Amino acid sequence: MEKKSSPFLPDLMLGSLVGLCPVIVVSGNFASGVIVALGILFCTLVMSLLMPALRSLFPERLRAPLAFGLAAAFTALYAVLAEAYSPLLSSLAGIFIPLTLVNCIVLATLRRGIRTEEATTRGVILKSFMFFSLLILVSAFREIAGAGRITLPMPGTEAHILTLFSLPPLRLLTAPAGGFILIGCLAALYRFVQRRLLGRRIS
Amino acid sequence: MNKRRKDILFENIAAAAFLSVMALLVASASFLLDNVADRRDSSALVKFAGSSSIGNPLLHSDSNFRRLYPITRRGRLLYGSVVALGDRLGQARIAFLFAKDGSLDSAGVIGAIPGDLAFSREGWFSEFLGKGGDFAFPMSKDDLRKADTVSGATESFRLTSNVLERLSRSVRQAASIRDKGED
Image 1 (cartoon, rainbow over the protein chains, first blue to last red):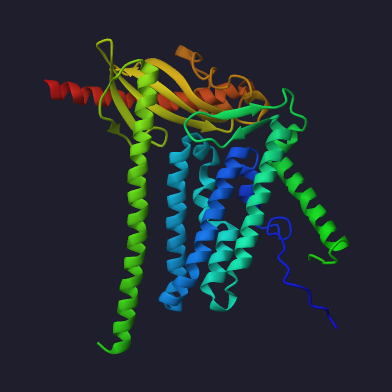
Image 2: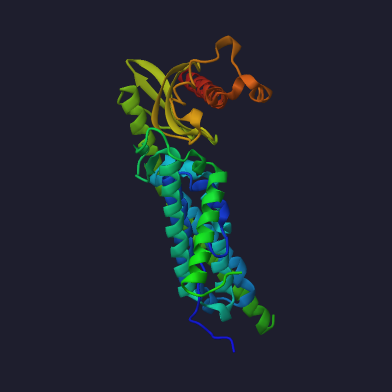
């Protein structure tokens, strides 16, 4: 008989390889990684909290368009706030701030929220925090190792860059190919840990 | 109208009202934060131009610049704008001052984040200006594919020259409207 373990929340990025587009592109720079990660976290948290109210107020046929409209409004609001916080960092993140709306994690939140039987807000929030933390860590590592510096996400029009190495140790990491290699290595490590230490298999 | 139809109509109106409230929220936030951006740009231009006499901005819908400020410096009318420039070599915000005939008076970097490519690490913006002249290179997108244009500076030069061309045109238009108004 198959033994049922406690609810397992595989990491979306490393376990399911979901939401990789913004991760690969924006995580070459720490500040843009933080801006995009915060946007995804903001949208996911707000939508997770509002979806139960939306479910109780509106019939099922209106939930999907309303949920997308709501997510688009919050994404636009975040884009405006990011532009006001730092126009330079906002332009560095570029199209990936508006694209938060169609980020896989935000879409998963909407999908779960629309279906009443899958109301697992806690799980979605936990996964969003895991995605957020990982994106920030990957961004920091890629910029430090690949460019020998770290761009701080400070407000204002000026850039705050700390140069750590005059000669970057692993320049490949700033390129998209380097991002794929790093995510691949982390995904392999994640699977190894899951299999060896926790006895779980990720297909 | 039967009850079911009435219910559906009521639900649709409620959904439309809900989305309208969200749209109003975003629009009012944009309006408030646009004022912040206006103040930030004008103070950056005042600091750069060394003048405290700055007029109300003329609004533009260009992707690189949105406001054009008339500035008086030592009795001379100039037009200034804060421009966002960016490509794979990096992102920069630059203050430009133009004379009213559309010629560039001065330019200064407010903030820049260089890209992560090897050739964008050293002074990528400083090479934007000062290259070109009568025989600007690259003149077209085809030139960008030639072996001579491996330097990131030439690619950035083309981007900057396009923006400056549009900005110069806007300054000339603004100056001619102002001159007509004075006449």
